[in-house]
Amino acid sequence: MPDFEALAAEHKDAVYRQLIRKCGNEEDAEDVLIEALLKAYRSLDQLKEDDAFRAWLAQIGRRVCWQLKARERLRPVMQLSALEEAGHEAIDLAPPPDDLADRARLRSLLQSAMSELPQDQRTVYALRDLEGRSGEEVARQLGISLAAQKSRLHRARAHVRAYLDQRLTRTGSASG
Image (cartoon, rainbow, N blue to C red):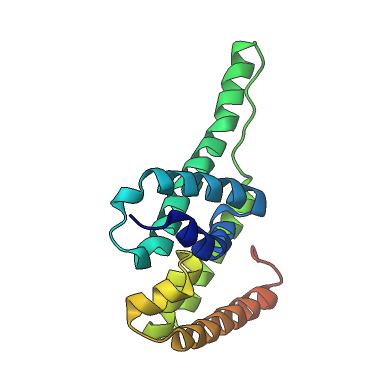
């Protein structure tokens, strides 16, 4: 049986950094990491190789984070139900149309920026920044060195940033 304490000590910081990006804040990431470590400990017999621990723990963490976000999305609905049962009128919780339009435009701009990237950079960017995978995991998956992965990610981020800056400053805003 793998030494859980040693594996957790070695990999928890890297997984925590991934979870901050995935969960959106440090507090949720801490809670998710603790729950993910507990679930990993309980299911340690399912781990086939010690080398896969970080990716396995990160996957558990992403799942826990997704469940947390799902509960948070339901909270307003549950509160709304309680208000309606108490005889209060419902309020519209939908984001304003301008916000929806801005998000759609930014999503479209990001897709356009990514489509201009060379395939090797696009793949690294998608795996790291969109899926939140670790650099080591991406390098291993793609069969490249960690340095090559970092270089591709750096170039991809610089291109996406320049592309978005150019498009957004030209119009003056995301909705322009």
